[in-house]
Image (cartoon, rainbow over all chains, first blue to last red; front, side, top):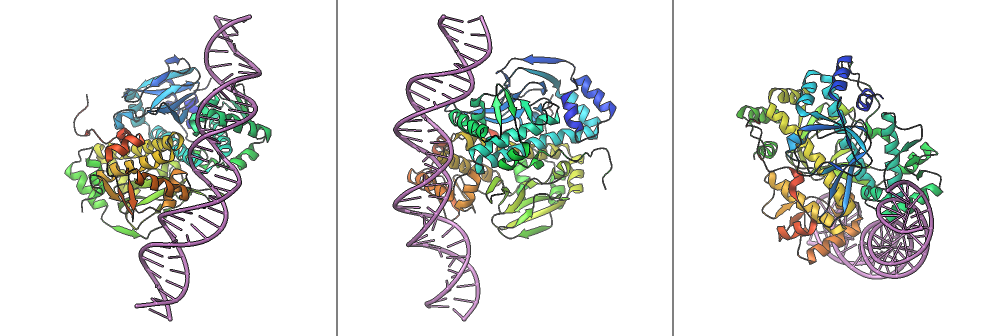
Length: 244
Length: 244
DNA sequence: CGTCGATTTGAAATCTATCAACGATGGTGG
DNA sequence: CCACCATCGTTGATAGATTTCAAATCGACG
């Protein structure tokens, strides 16, 4: 299988063969994590960068009262902890959902890769900025979209992100989430998530069953959710041509 | 008045005199923006970086239906657009709330400053990462805190951020926001914001009147909101000592 | 077959939005 | 100085959305 990280980056940047070789080499040794285990916990200062090769993980916080809030998903090709060193310590946890193959790359290796390749440097910054843009869009969803629009929007986002790493067909993909996970992501109760999913299914906008999401009419659900893929910043392919 | 940007950075990093001189020089020419005007709009690719010298601005998105969602605040010392060039285009707007003094620094100048000073480079990356951490915390607030906790939490955050640039006393600060703005930030209606504020006032946790916030008992409201300032990453002061 | 977690269902309680009106305030122009 | 206007804050009543609690069903799996 193609390295999903390279695949994701190359959707937007043109990596040199040397870059690709270096990345492939750096991600040689894979470690397997079981479902529902933490990769990193709040307060940690890991000296490795984690790269998801396969599987599904999330960023989350736990509240005093016991509630859990999922504040981001990591899918194959996603990198985390690139920046913890600057912040000093993690302010949230990262845990797997399904089983995950994870590559741990020493920070020093990543740093030297970025130093030696400007394109790669840009690509990694880009990936981090997209994560931030996703956070903003989630905030919009929680604040100003109805529960059904919010869930529809999330599933639209997943479709595009999964397609970018070859893990989705034209209109469907596997999603190892429970309805409780979805609730902790959207701020809804799992009971209400259940009812929303039923309604979306009834209106023919989406089916989520046995770990697989299908969007029978992609344009329709995007319109319903007010989904505009701008914020994922996937379109243009720069990085190799000179600007200016 | 001390340059709020330098003040903010120096709370955590030790800048050299040369760094400070360069920054002060770069932020020499100030431009004034009226209240409620846009600095940058969605789709723009500005070639300048904006630095808020005084006043109050916000990042926001507007939805098809007309709703507005505020996804971040910019206070004196905050920088924006540092990264737009990499993303290609803004995916949200930035607008003033009160009147703002804004410095516009050409990207080339900022880039060369970062190239020449590793500490400054780290400091700017740090500021961006804190913005991201704030987004995550807001997501937690919207998803898993009650409306009163959420507003209390926001006001706790403001206190710390304002204190970092010398704009707050031990327990109060000016805040040029309307209740509608607060609603667009928290995802609540302005009517409900009004009722929540009344209740918080009645319980003695906070008073917000005529543009000034007072927290009579800081520890109490922090406890009530479940506020933990970790995510603002303000404590340690590194950047000058070698890490080995 | 029994168990465990996840999904589904129903009913009641709670929270929040909406709508509509009124009051306060500040600025502007006559 | 006053009338006027616009914006913001406040209040009450009602409708709607969502949570909570409790129980039933379903499915995977040892």
